[in-house]
Image (cartoon, rainbow, N blue to C red; front, side):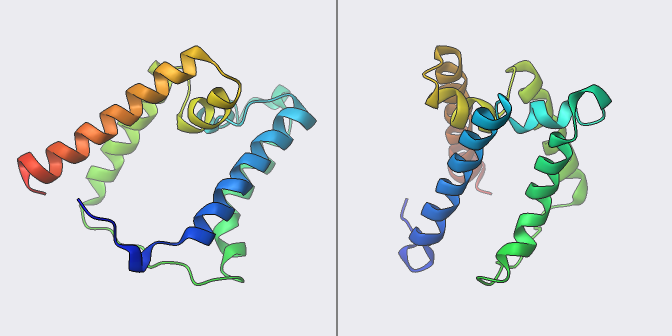
Length: 142
């Protein structure tokens, strides 16, 4: 395995990580809520939950358009049939439900709060991701 250093974006990656951390801190300090995307989206249509969920999701959806004013967006490449992405999205949603949270909730917010449950969840989903890439690239040859 090698890293393509010519396309590595250290500054952009660092800035993006800091903005994610800042958003998570602001949400918990100002609203008392964890920035777990699956939990936010699952209660999006609950009118008692407040409009902050809509603002959060709209910020996620609109942020690439704001980013374009500062840098060029990478070209989107879809190499598989749309049905594969649909099935993958369903499996990710199912995993988020079974794991009582998603990568943002456990990996960003849970680990920063030193949650043991989030540590286990993060180790499991990262390990599963590593294993999937290994199988797809080295055993299947995709």
